[in-house]
Length: 136
Image 1 (cartoon, rainbow, N blue to C red):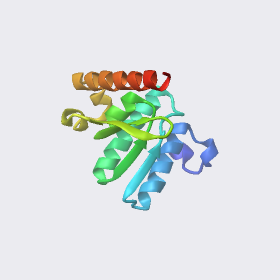
Image 2 (image 1 turned 180 degrees about the vertical axis):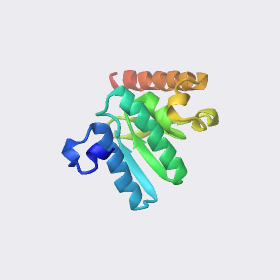
Image 3 (image 1 turned 90 degrees about the horizontal axis):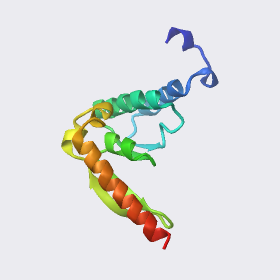
Image 4 (image 1 turned 60 degrees about the vertical axis):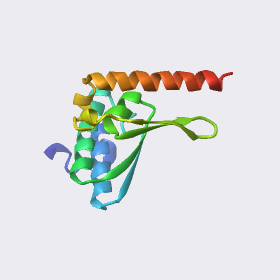
């Protein structure tokens, strides 16, 4: 960390920039955080580590957040509820409750749980159903 303490944002890695952005946001003590595709530009390993960090910080500071993502796995691992949206116009197609067993785990650990895969499959099926209705 010492080698980047005086670095400019453009000199930081994507993961470091995301960490800095999260700290800048949390320092203002917001009631609600909007996380719009926060991990999309990161490599997979960094993404998994940051999911755990963000999840832990949100829980530690008792923050509510809205995570916008196209990544089903990320939505399951990071959420209490998942709102699946229809396209054009954006309406809620279905709401999925994430099982408490998954919510009590870190995102990385949640991905290994059987209920993660079961919920992933349900959401995948619903997405395919929505897509087929949209193209008819």
